[in-house]
Image 1 (tube, rainbow, N blue to C red):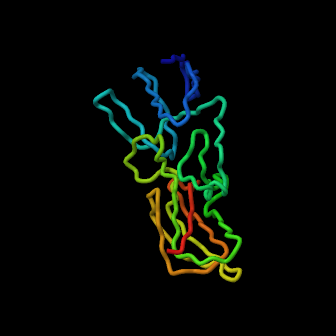
Image 2 (cartoon, rainbow, N blue to C red):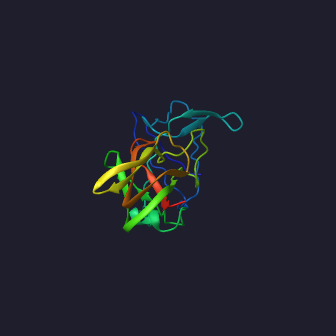
Image 3 (cartoon, one colour):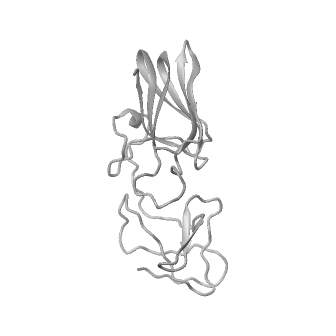
Amino acid sequence: MVAATVKPGGFRWVDFPLPQPLTPGKVYFVMLPATPKLCWRIYDHADGERVYGKPGAWTTMGGAYALKPFGTPRKLGRVGPEAAVDGLAVPLEGQFHQWRSDPAQELPQWLEVDFGKTVTLNTVHLTFDTNLFGRFPSSKPGGEATADDYWLLYNKGGKWEVAFAAQGNWRRFRRHQFPAVTTDKIRLEILKAKNGREARVYEIRAYKE
């Protein structure tokens, strides 16, 4: 338990130094006792859920209370296009092993696989980030960085053609089959994400089945 003094006045950030470092991958809950004339600001347009009340009689609502962690950031580990083809579809401790679109840039964004030769394929396996590991309980399907709308393109004589398209996705694993194509490159293009800003992909595999 930690304590802090909140001076009278308007909204402001209040520091609550933690007694010990946080453990990566572990879920934490921040609870404040009811205090007269003190309110906790809510983030505008925030994803997530918040609760209020008392044990055994909690009320759940959308949105999130304002929090701003500070301290020494944890390294993401292996994050980049290579991670989507390294054979791992789950994160390791301190290593996410996934491709992330650039949150500073708007969608759509794409991930390209160059086979280095001409291949024939008709099936693609995709593993998305649905916040499966260490997530807060939520009634919303998928995760904040799950790819919602996307399509797969393949190189055909220097032009990109659509192999298949998907909308309204919320699943972690997707297997897509389509008429066989012959190509040397494919692109997974994320058109929309659940949070509207960023999508994450753990793995992309291509087969002829």
